[in-house]
Image (cartoon, rainbow, N blue to C red; front, top):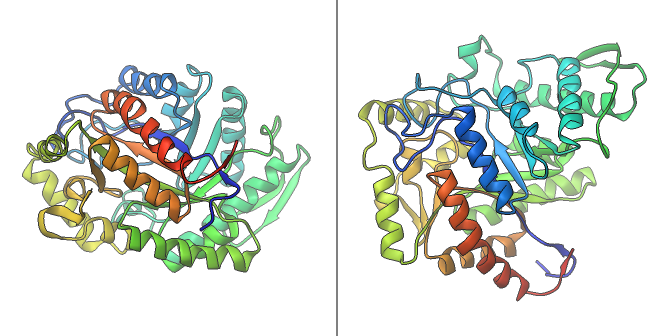
Length: 372
């Protein structure tokens, strides 16, 4: 795609609510997800100039043994927003577990507390068995239909402090009021997923379509399919990419670090993740856990993390120059926002900001002029 009028790329970091450490997939995290620790991660990201922070949604721990400590999403982000001043928060939310009217009030309040630093990652799907833990048994297609009404009703409630009524199949509001409202039109909506339902919903409702990293051929195909859906809906398309990083000064050191990351993984964690993957109907989850020799999807693309982690389990591995070139290539495909992470999240945040992002921006700027 052309390089004219491309916005300057955004770089985000990640809040590890499952826990953190130099090794993952153990029964318990080396660094539990306490508020004090997660605040240090957020401080590192804000201090190193990252644009936003993704905070995922979980019902059980998805990186260590399922009963390991887990920090609840909304409570955690509300506390973190109150002790930060600049960085944005991209908060993953599952429609259906709280009423749309009540959530609209909660989100508007957090948007006010943060001074308009809130965005919402709508997560209609879920790993096999996850929804059922909380008594939710509706099918995949219905989850996406409900998510669309959830988004539409939130936008309606945030338009005006006047009473609003919404009569949907899954969301019903009668003279509901949200006051005070949100800043500057309210949070942007991010949506992901690789299924047809996900792409169609993104085309109609997403401000940003998110993809988990995969080979450039697969990402290009996702973007092509999504572009068609955005075009059908008459809406502009914007894309984000979620990936882990393993960056070191030499390529050999990077691969050693990648292998060491999962070297102490517990067999029970492997069993739990394999059970999730083998029974999952999620297109993206199955792609992340694709079985390939040495976990190599491409020369610098490694999915070893998927053996111990739900959802995104693939990393870019290499030197700063190698990984910067990879990010530049994904930017060429149309990615304008990169959601990055690395273990442990404090040290790797600093490494990425110091060694990787300047090299990446330099390569992208060589492609042509960028909008401010």
